[in-house]
Length: 426
Ligand SMILES: O=C(O)C(=O)C[C@]1(C(=O)O)C=C[C@@H](O)C=C1
Image 1: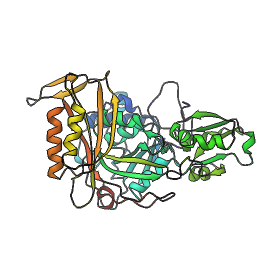
Image 2 (image 1 turned 90 degrees about the vertical axis):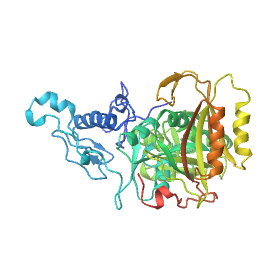
Image 3 (image 1 turned 135 degrees about the vertical axis):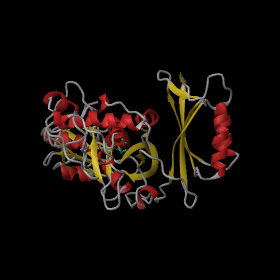
């Protein structure tokens, strides 16, 4: 897959050796381990803050991150924490630069009334994920990230308040990477949003379809348009790109007159591309489901339809475990809306027993299940208690309001979610 090249959009990025850019902020998030304790978070933020400061006056999504001296505390919207950069302490050797104790105001506070929620998404402006972020959290400050992993870490490191990430498309199926990341990270699903996806074929102004030899887009978007591209008689090589809008930006920035991109009409507008064909998805009811992620879970309720997502694994010796798990839901009349299995042989899971002793354990597969009930309902609690008996590992990824938006072609009404319509709780 072609990696997003140097773009015009500053966005959070993992540092990748050999890729450098003046316009993309490269916070080495990978170096800042994702961990659970508050002290660990603080040290991760300090590492990140020092990297940001070292980048001088570059910006994260338009928030200027000044160079030395350390920036003053930002209240809510800023991406910079008031933590003394480690490097500046060592370099200056100056007494007044000695580390100061952390104060409560150093920790990025939870979003408050009237403040703009910072929502991380993967891609560049014009990506469907940006639109999903706006649908989930109207009026939010959407923060582009170059990888799904970076969006997770942006929330864990308090650079963003939420992340909105795709998990499934009605045509292309599951976005497996995000299932794996949900397990690896400690974020909670606090909502879901279904976005109708309406693709356009676009090229530089004046380019005719007959001149095209290549079409670039996100693999999911290419898959969603496969039959239509063939039916259009286009003799084009398909090339995968990090995200749809990024492909449009790439074609425009490089003046590629033999290449088209598949992306949204907003991407065409943003990057000065001309739409050659509108609505080229193979199915007019093409919908992508996104999950909304936060550091804290929301309190499950029973006054509206809720969904709960879990992941579990069982030992090889267990017999008919899947059948037993599914029957725990069936006997309580709980509908399942999704089952996904992911191979997991090479990554041990740390299990903690009642005495808080941890052991690493290998499982062949991880099973992800979404079911239609709230964790506040006794039938859901009982089902999970039973599931726990059959399995060796069980984690609740979140219990959250279902997106009840009717999915008609081209609809994009606002979702109501307790995490978005009422003041954020975390
Ligand atoms: O590339 C984008 O624009 C995205 O937001 C990603 C993504 C995906 O990962 O599935 C989101 C929605 C569409 O299904 C196509 C691509």
